[in-house]
Amino acid sequence: MREKDMEEKDMEEKTEQEKREELLAWASDRCCYYKTQGYHCSESTIRACSEALGLTLSEDVLRSACGFRGGGGGYHDRCGVVEAGCMLISYLYGRLSPYQEAWPYSYLIRVLHERFKEELGTIYCRDILPKELESGTDTPCMSTYAAGARVVVGVILDAPDLLLHIPEEEKEI
Image 1 (cartoon, rainbow, N blue to C red):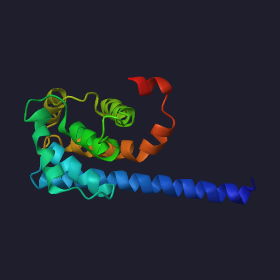
Image 2: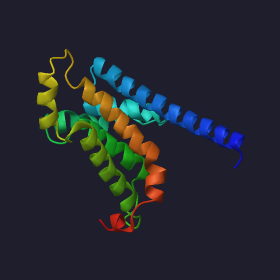
Image 3: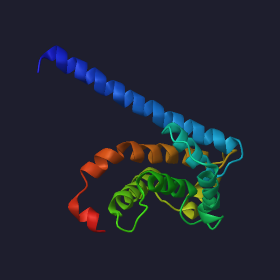
């Protein structure tokens, strides 16, 4: 490959990476915006991430995310940001028939959990909330909303490549 062609290819890759970063930042900012408007974690995430991905969700789907706030109705289990991410992955990759494979969405949800845990240290509201409250910010969980939205959109953007290169043993889980 000629040097000029390689430079042009590098520019295209940087451009794609820059576009990705802008989209992740937009989703993050939009998720925080929804929090300031009074939406909870799961509500903010599903709204912001679906908008970032160009998805138009029905009011029924948006309403379905409400119960996951605060780790499941305030139960403080799995973070509502993660739950909304699971909803979006299922919306995009879920099945409508028992004859369809479960591994695509199951694998992506496992990746979501791992990336969220890597970014925030845990997937549980009961572990996240005390740290957020200790931070002394006026708006608890804002950093979780911001980082979580980036993780959710990142997994969905990476999904085609992740599914193309899934290890065979992952399909059997």
